[in-house]
Length: 302
Image (cartoon, rainbow, N blue to C red; front, top):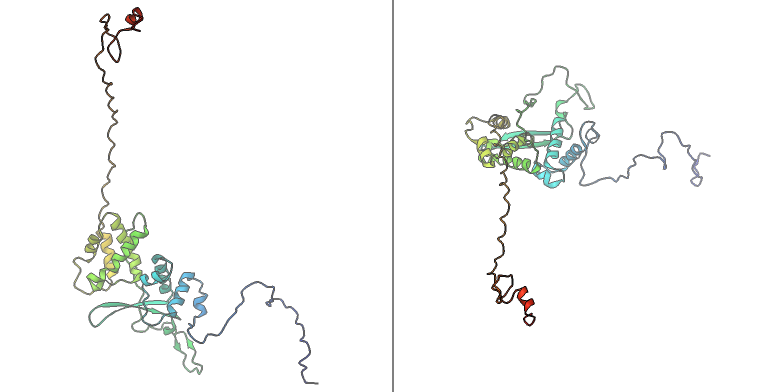
């Protein structure tokens, strides 16, 4: 009696509240197991309550890239349809919530490079294994615990830069290209994407005042101190605000010349008035001959 009959039809289950059924709405999954070319993403990122959808997608893209891949704003702008401003804002979101870090290092030849670090679980370095636990789970550090040596401190905000009267996309792109090229004049002026986004409106305000890009570049790179520049973006922001040139003088449109009536056409030239061959009286006629009275007196002439 304890043998299961495989031919017996299964019992019909009652429809309980809360269970998904074919007619219920909502999301369902059609999943296949990945064995190659996949990236593990935590729900803390995929379902983050404060990050924008663009920032979450960008974080997933960064996690999927190999080590050494270029992730500057120009490269990401060429890869995705979003513009440089939106991508820079998404990078700033990820940096604020710990999913992205930027470290500046000096190479043996003296050049300063920026390394971008994508974190798949922010804060995991700040957790230590609990003492006496066999499971190896991590616990939060005790209250008052001093941070590790070398932990990055919060960066001070950059000085405010002037803003252009009109944020033209072409003008802002010219400003971004100008800032990105400063490192060719001085390797110490290597700027991060966040710093470039902050400084670009200030450069655009200069360009809007009819200052050439060469003049702006000279104002930012001339007479730099010989000491190491710990915060080059702060120095550039100070120069953009302190040395902002005045706006160009107002040029009134040229006045229209006063209205002048066109000269009157000269009267048509007229030939000499002929005289009548009969009475010598002048009369209007295209040729010489008799006037009307003389033609009446001489019917044969008429």
